[in-house]
Image 1 (cartoon, helix red, strand yellow):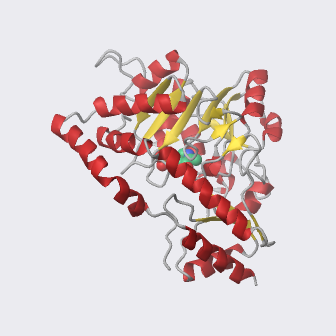
Image 2 (tube, protein in one colour):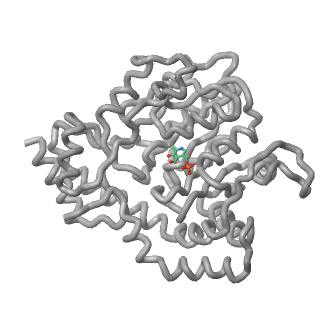
Image 3 (cartoon, protein in one colour):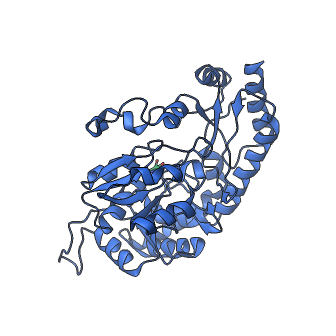
Length: 366
Ligand SMILES: Cc1ncc(COP(=O)(O)O)c(C=O)c1O
């Protein structure tokens, strides 16, 4: 058996005719830049997430940068997690602010809200939680801290579209939430794409200007913005895929349930912990395991795709050495970067494939 970490072809085969049809509509109308497909997809996303404004842009990275710019964060500090994809922290630096890392909760992989207050200084402007692997961070606690210290919240929801925390959709709880439609996300484009979410009319209006060079009206520039529009062809693809997203996420949860059943007795691994207030969309199924690197080789030898997200905490990345962090500053994050392994969890995975993966893991620890 050969099981990739992600099988985009399996998803594609189910929806290809609908997607081609929708792309053709864009081509026939030559409506390429912020055209009808973008508007329709933004409206669909607003209804899907119950958020007032959805503003498409060119990537999840740009969505973070636009969010920071819209909130006037061009200096000071932004508190975030060191256990995330690079863009969470790089965009903070890009706008001229400083990322201040705070360690994570070993169970959820998300920023530990009980450590946030210790990181706050008189320069702190915002908190940027990440809803890692599809499980929302503890937003109730984070919102309370933000209110107490008058801080903004940008939710990096690149990995958590459709996830819920305490009854609320992830990405719609803070001042601005961001999405990535990178192809490996639960809602993936056929290229790069991203989005900002907000319930504020003022922020939405500014974000819409910032994504087109900060102009309003045309050729009059109020801000120095970006060229970061959501591509119409990507919007057409995403509009079709959004209709299937709930089914796909439900399938991922079913796959996770099967892993929990099959791997419950393996004492060398810890299965993902889901917070009682959270509904995860399982963008990844990430286990903590003993002898991780050898397990990974064993699975790869058996043609099972798996990956390490993330092998090096951001505070130890070479490019962030100017922040003066050192080994040992964030022990949980550092430990997990040596022990986590993500297994296939995509929607089209079948029972036999999951049983095969579980069997190979059990075999390894025997
Ligand atoms: C947590 C997180 N933040 C930001 C991004 C950046 O998104 P993109 O790749 O669309 O620029 C990603 C995507 O990988 C991500 O996983």
